[in-house]
Image (spheres, helix red, strand yellow):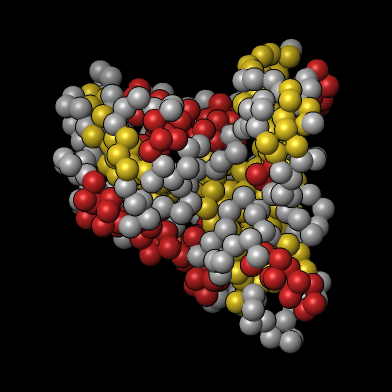
Length: 435
């Protein structure tokens, strides 16, 4: 039986150790769609049971750039659910290369344009993009559909708003990077206020380094920058999924990053959520985060858990596929079902296994002249998968961010020794050449 505990009306189901339960009563819980529960007459579902519409339901998927999460995750999942999908995007030519369904050009940053682009009665309006959570939530709410609370989505994306909102729960120094007081608690981390993928994120030791980095970053981009207190500790992720009533902890990765001043993620290793996880859940609760998928990064230091950032969507960089494989459940479908108004399925974590996602990172700029294509293979008891993020012939410019990934190796096995050995053999057997 899945461990859990109750406090008041809130409930959290946990696929690992038990953590404080919660209930989210302020989410938009809209119209359910007509479904066939694959022969099951009750609302209870087995771990792999999926729902298919009796009347084809329309899903509007809101996307910016093309990502593997959408192309190889959510779109195939929607097809398996029998949904009619229309893709709304500001980059139609890119998405049309990989998706042969309706692709409609739209200013996806404006919820009014999303609303105007919807031509029928939708069953769901959904996005997995960091940047598009708030406008998508507002558009879904317009149609009375299940949605993330748009204020929570805005707070999660805007790091300055997030720190301001969490000040009473966990105060962290944060300031406009151009208006940092003289007595700021250096070292600081300077970063774009609404950035992603470790882009233009630097550790600075003093005011001179801060000023230099701000000018350097501002030469490349004109969006606001923040300077935050550096938070020491072990870096973890927390992966959660909520249906507006219950929040489920799916698990946690232990993250290894590059040496400072950069913060490139070099490895994510599946682990038990740390004992301090209830502190993270309390902070997410304060932010109003609890519907759909969420990928939270936090550090643990001397018994204290402190959030680095909240990505109000599914974990990326191919760790989403690793998570689905590890849990052994149709994860992308489950997320879509939540946005279709369905409760979380009662799935549980399978037997204890070890898993690692390890990106292949470019070490120099140039042209990628050789690299393996997509691979799936078994090395003894270890299942290995590789999905490229750059194609042979692509130009590569080293940025010291997650954009330097050439591809990601995923490995699942019985324990760390077997998984690490299989990863080493895979890396040794394949070449990635930049000339």
